Image (cartoon, rainbow, N blue to C red):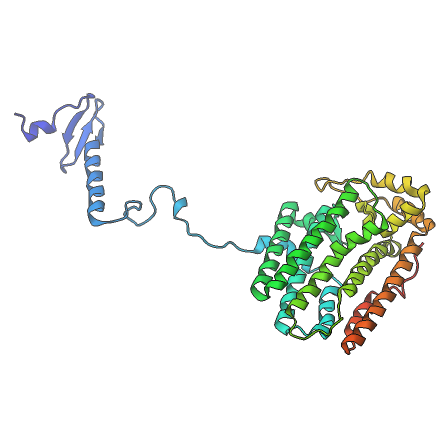
Length: 391
C-alpha cells in the first residue's frame, strides 16, 4: 500500500518525475529539471468548470466573460445594409438635366382625368424611377459612353453595379404601385413594362445583326419602347381617376402620336447636336438605325455601303470599350444623309405628326369641354416649327 506522500514523488511513465511544490500545486519535473504544470490538474479543473456550467444552466457556447466561444460568425445579428451603393447610379442619372416631359404630361392629362393628388404624386414617382432605370440599361445595352454629354452611369459605377441599381429601381417602382395604387394600375405597369422590353429587344437585334428595319417596323418598335412609357402613365391614371370620363373619349391616340413624335424628334435632334456642337452625334457612335438612317438606306442604295461599312466596325458587345467615330467620319455620314434627303424627310414627318397632335388635342378639348393649355405648352416646348433644316 503506497501512502499519499510516496505517490506524489513517483516517476511518470515517460521518465518525468511527478512532484508537488510548496504551494501544493502538482507539477512535473522532466529529465533536465524543468518544471511544468501537470496536465491532470488542468484536466480536472476543466472538468469541474464544465460540470459547474451544466449544473448552473449556463449556455456552454459562451465563455466566462459572456463572449461567443469558438467561431463568431453564427452570432452576428441580421440587419438591413445601407442603400448607398445600390442607389448611387440611380441618383447620378436623376441629377442629369432632363426635359421633364413625362411629369409635365402627367399633370397635363390630369386636367381631363382628375386623379387625386396623392395618386398623381405616386404615379410621377413611379414613372420617374422606371424612366431612370431604363436609361441606365439603355446606355449599357447600346454600349453608349455618354448620356446627354455626361459619362453614362456604367462608365462611372461599372456595368454590374449599374445593372443592379436599375433592377432595384424596377422592384421599387412596382412595390410602390402595389402599396399605393390599385390592382388595375399594377396590371397596367406590368403589361407596359413587358411592351417596353419587347420594343427594346428589336432595337438591339437590328444593331447586333446589322439589319436595317423598314419604316413600319421601326415605328412599331417606337410604339412599344418609347410609346410604352407614355401609354403606361395614361393607363395608370385612368385606373386611378375618380371622375366619369365622357363616352367616346379616349386618349390612346394622343399617347401613341406623342411617343412617335418624341422618339423621331430625338433621332433628328441627335444630328442637330452634331451640327451645333461639332461632334456629338452619339447615334452614329452606337451604330443605331435611327429614322434618318433607315430612310437613307431604303431610298439611296448608293450610300448603303458607306453607312453599313462604318456600322460594321462598331463594337456590339458591352464588354468592349467603344471609341467615338472621328469627326471626319461623322461629317461624311451626315453628308450622305443630307444628300439622300433623309433630314428633309425626317423633319417633314415630324411636322406632320405635330400637326396630328394639335388636331388630337383639339378633339379632346371639344369632347371633354375642358381646354388644356398645359398640354399645348408641353407640345410647344417640343415643337419643330422653329428648327432649322439640317444638311
